[in-house]
Image (cartoon, rainbow, N blue to C red):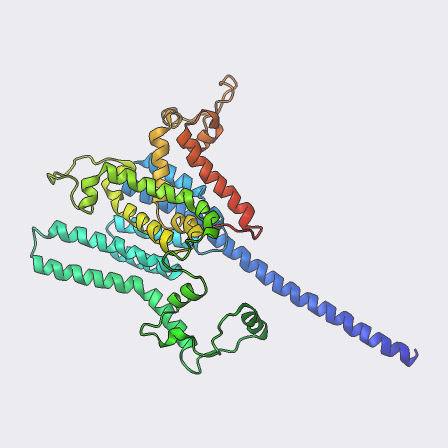
Amino acid sequence: MPSSQITMQKPFLLLTLSHWALWINLWKVSWVACLTGMLSTFCSLLSMATSAVALHDLGCLVLHCPRQAFYGALLFCLSPANVFLAAGYSEALFALLTFTAMGQLERGRSWTSGLLFALATGVRSNGLVSIGFLMYSQCQGFFSSLMVLNPLSQILKLMGSVFLSVLTLGLPFALFQYYAYTQFCLPGSAHSIPKPLLQLAVDKGYRIAEGNKPPWCSWELPLIYNYVQDIYWNVGFLRYYELKQVPNFLLAAPVAILVAWATWTYVTTHPWLCLTLGMRRNKNNETLEKPDPGFLSPRVFVYLVHAAALLLFGTLCMHVQVLTRFLGSSTPIVYWFPAHLLQDQEPLLRSLETVPWKPPSGNSPPGQKIPRNSIMGLLYNWKTCSLVTRCVLGYFLTYWLLGLLLHCNFLPWT
């Protein structure tokens, strides 16, 4: 073979082998990425399904109305924030931990509830707000025993319980802030960063751990959370109130109206209960033998305050379009109040509740279907449903479908 042919074949052979090696490496990377994505999606789907069970259990404990609790769990399965609950996001796990912690607290297991709330705070920082549930439960116990036991000992016990609750729930958040401080503010703590990530940081304007100290390191309370929210996300009081953000406000309007409507309904039904922060049910301090079941139960008060606080903070200080998933993964009110509306204002649902389920027979009226799932029964008989039912289910189904179509195609969504 001539030497010219040998010199020509060697580069070709090396080029072919290099291409094969590149494809093998790419296949390995894509396989790992695909497996990671599948595992994260599976974990989110499992957390979402378990969250529905936890929400149903919580509803039975708080509402004392099994049907309304069941409807709330079914509506959670059709959540407007469904795409974030089903994808590899933290919302599903946060909802599972939060709803389970609430259920444990309703059973009087304060320590278990506190640990679950702390885990939820480790998943998402807005879990810090859940400290209100523990403090409210402790205050209820304090006032109920104040007239029986020594007041001073009860005050000391309350202060100790509140301190431990704040410490437990704040620990995950504090540990993350400390970790960030050691990475960005202490000398010699930075790790080597691959060149592609360095180039990405340069292109995007990100700050890297090897660079100069960021300004938040010199703050009296050096919190990277506040710095990132302020500089990179532009999160702050009324910062989102711009004309160009009107579409995002419209996107968040349904869930905001839903929670505001729930708050108004509850406050106008139980004004004295709300004025006394749920500690007294009426002016004469008489205990009702059978409190209102369902959404109007006195035990819903603390959950409503939690939802209203999240709505107020999210509307004034956050990117408002995230309200749908922010509230949908944090509070059961988003599902309990629509369940209350369906049960209270839908005649067809009441008729479906009284008719035992049976397979449709051949001589059944055309167009009339009675499935085992009452929510599906409303969808099957859509034309005969009330306006409230159409609005509630229409909102849930529309956002459920649009979220899948838009977010999965990298288009703007909540």
